[in-house]
Image 1: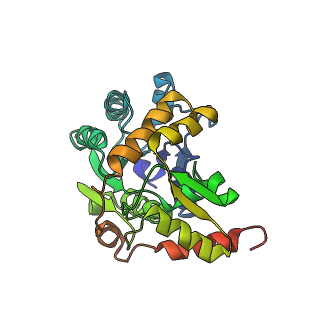
Image 2: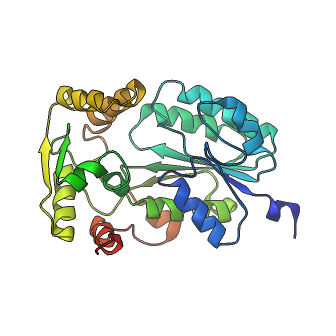
Length: 277
């Protein structure tokens, strides 16, 4: 077996919504993985650059899922430093998870694209899983979702599709080199539409109410959300969700040769995975 074949792939944010799924897929495919997080060995923390060299040592490729988001202050500097360390460590390939419609994220994309390494960008829309594995999940569970967004449409995408695309790029670098895959689902939905479909699938009464951003910020403050995350929420809901992403793309189809998964399938699988489902 060649040295290249046994060198692991680094998956950053390996406990996150995409990182966890990608690490599982790589492991199932028999590919060595270094699933990096604050609790891994070696530990990896995006807020502590001293943890990065050990995580990068000896890996062939890296999946970059920056936390909390590429749009936050300091992300561009962090990505530039990480890419330089990766190049110095002999990493051959970078796969960057990016955000659709985020100017700041596109600046980070350019750093990766200009790295001199083999690269692929996964520019994703809002995740299905934000309704079940993120800050919206407790509201869904409580049966009342309050968000500072109106009738804007979003092409929500399944993290399972993102993980499948990432796996394809990491297994077959040359086939996906230099590609920017804009990843969306097959339909445009408002947040109200999505909640209605979750309610229908689960048979529960789940309401959706659009509220002012100031009210939402008061809720975040009451929940003791760090100020950085509060600023990110404002950015996402007032800037990114302004209708700029209200269009579908063929990124999943181009990368995988199949259509993206539909929100109804995701909603039904939530029911099947529920303890009493």
